[in-house]
Picture 1 (spheres, rainbow, N blue to C red):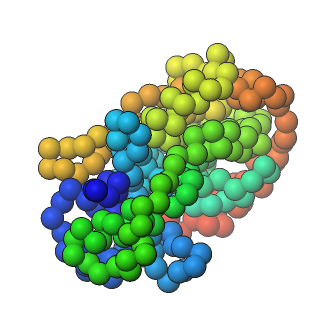
Picture 2 (picture 1 turned 45 degrees about the horizontal axis):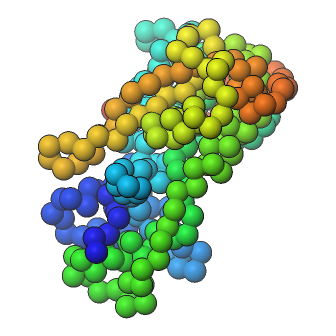
Length: 280
């Protein structure tokens, strides 16, 4: 039986590669360093599992958020939300910065003479799995004549945790959106189209419509398209937006929070460096 892996250590499993060398190096192309996903029982071994085939149609489902970093496309697709950005300003990408309500994965910032002029918060969300994908990983390696333990080839099913993934990220966004809205800034959720489609079906999206610059909360949905050369490409397929009240209604909740703009600007400016400069 074929492995359910579609992408492994940033490469399509349809390609002819020196998989033994790839497994030894354990590199993630999107992070430009060692893959940060590992088993608790084997922390020295990176999982390398980016995308899996799942469901009746064997859809390609991204299970690692770093897969969304390919080509930095998701950040380029947010530049229009930097309302105060002007030609000549630098664009910087600041990772993992805390605000009231939690931490934000990335801040896309417009910087002039070392000062942050504007920013957009960007959260990444891919699908969480149930069970383990480890056996699918080992099955793939075995198919490439790479030695693995026989006990790792015992069939073990994994699942996609649709409900928990969707509800958890919506609650996290709800905790953060008032901060952005009170400051007149934007927060963007970047996800695969299958997750956004699930949200629209299972939650109340009546107040979440076509993207408008005036709204604080934005949803950017990407499809993962298989190319003629057997690689995969991210395509932006849908943009939606709402305000804090619309996001709260999706969860059947009410809204909250506030913070001084200067506090966030100072946190971002402290992290700005040559390493955060967004380059293609």
